Length: 208
Length: 195
Image 1 (cartoon, rainbow over the protein chains, first blue to last red):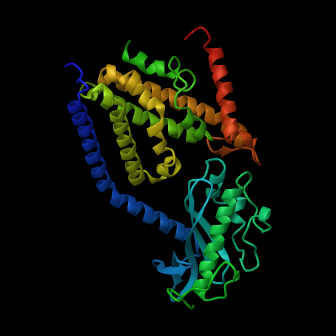
Image 2 (cartoon, each protein chain N blue to C red):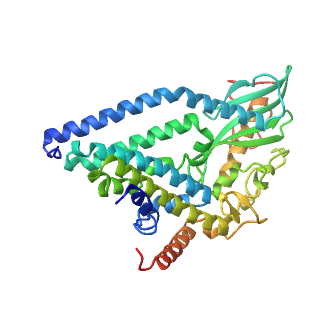
Image 3 (cartoon, rainbow over the protein chains, first blue to last red):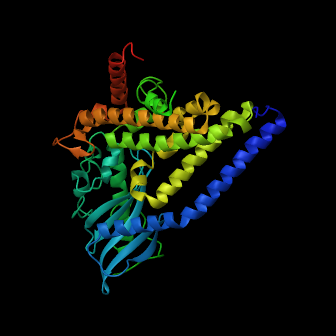
């Protein structure tokens, strides 16, 4: 068969048909995978929680904290009736896009650990924030932000930045600091930096 | 040309990176480590083979004036389907490669092979061509990534053997140009007069 002639009718029909078939295919694959993708993401969140708080029993209790018009999801890790840790999701904008962190605090307000939930930093540079056990990541553990300035050394803080990835390090640190503010708002402790943060407006407030 | 030859020519004679000089954007962007380069190469290989086959099967029914938009729709549908499937069934692979998958749509190798080969050859020949070019792309990207990772981060396939950082410039964009240029020169020297 010879090639279809480029008449208006042929062009409309052929391009229309291709688009229709592709759209049908895409929507069916999307319908097929949507549930599984959601499940995979939930598992990822659960793993991140388990990684950033001390050992806990049962499922974490979720609370929503409203701070400066943004809602933060806080997962409380419980052993019996007492809270052993808080895992707080925090987002900041990095070099290549948003960086989503899970920041864990132990009951006494110290940073327990951090985990990167998602990011789009440069592989080989900013993407080093995902390396568990690297100096950049472990330096946060056991620090109490009340006496540990959460900004990179170039900005006068206490955090060692990753070489050649200052923007990423800054964003990571900002996300940790933001999570700490959420923690303060949640536990009802006074917010340190009054200029930047305002106390929680009641919703989701929690006293231990 | 036999089908084996079709596959082989993509590796050396029609190597997409060093000879055809196509797909430079993903080449420069994703070769920060050998594994990243290889992942990008393999993902492209899959998309290229599938899109070559479909385009060669449909070529007769696509009028010339709308062929480019038609190819782009087909290619991006494949890329999106692969991205969704990967996200659902291979989450760990998706975490490493996820960033690069959408880049395949704009990789001119895929469109270039559709235009230069698939739309005038049979489905099987086009599949072999896609496979060959895809393998050539994977090989070149892995090699560039290997050199950049070795010099830039002092590691091989993620296995680190130096204590500190490497020569940082090789992980950054200028290093990509340096390594690509030097490797292209080396490739030309080695194949001089033979292709």
